[in-house]
Image (cartoon, rainbow, N blue to C red; front, side, top):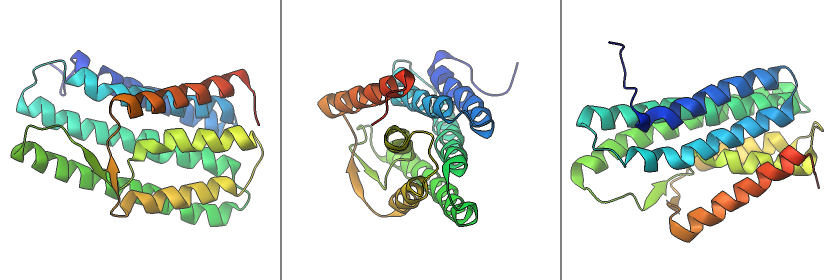
Length: 204
């Protein structure tokens, strides 16, 4: 048998990673529009992977594996991929590299902290999570496409500013309500609208 877990509860997480790796190569080759689409598709997968996982009775090891694999994938999907996209779109590369390193580092810290707190929370209660401490790293899959819609394939400092602000929000002690019900539906519809605009090539 292979190491790891391969039941349907992790399929969306693995798919999100594959899409983001492909998106990274697209970004390196200068196809920014398609790489942004890949970022959004990864975000869409991430929105539903937790719901899919909860449909199956999992062992404690499977639950812990799910937490770890989700965060490891998030570091690539919403840490490295956005950094690569914004690198291609930045005006001042040397200054941007400093911001990019800060962004990926803060994403790593945010994800590791979440893992520790989530395992602790699950030992103490069976209730669902109601708030996040710090901005979730997946939020970049909403913010970056919005900047792209307004700027298209034009190199601009807007991408550097975006990463800097989001990087700070990753580690600030912000209490952010977890989207549920109507708020989750609104975010999903908003993201799908962004995706449609970018796929159709309609900018502002």
